[in-house]
Length: 266
Image (cartoon, rainbow, N blue to C red; front, top):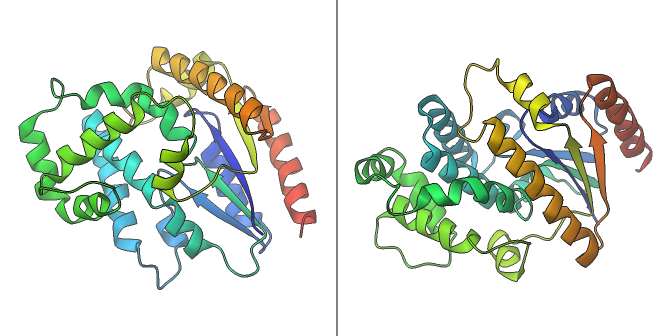
């Protein structure tokens, strides 16, 4: 039985640095999955989703470069749909612990608060939607094939509609999402938490900012995580631990503790 640990948090909290360190120091019985940016180099040589992973990463990069919220939503959602296949490919018979950066039953519920309203008919641009279909048609067709819908070939618009209809009223991981993503909640959740002002200062120097990386949006997302975790802790009895990410020394201390725990767990 593989134990799943989720490490998540808002942009700027230190997740990427932590996973970079884990990739070089984790024991062999621990597997890693990063989302929404998929580590293409870590995929097995015979991966069946390498092309999709590359295209999703390209899509996410283009969305950031152009500040296209709708395209970013496509990339985020598409990466989450690959989660279960990533589990299958990244885990081996020797895997005892899976540590994931973001999880399809947790983080989409948060980011839908920002992106869903940007997928409404009044916001979407027909010219851009046609461009997405032309540029990423093969990938979007693949994504639509994973959804419980009948496609008419207008892939981008169909995915936008599905995201909006699925997440607009979802406040907690329900049976519909469990069936869609073919997975269960993680066994343990670590949330790297720092004040939105601190996180915004950290990401302000980045060359490319994601559409949701605004101070007021970070504050909204932070509160939404708190509400979601309160419900999960009460209803699903999943242990959730908040990690102080306001100072890098605190993050280093957490990393050392985590590495020690997973090393001894085999």
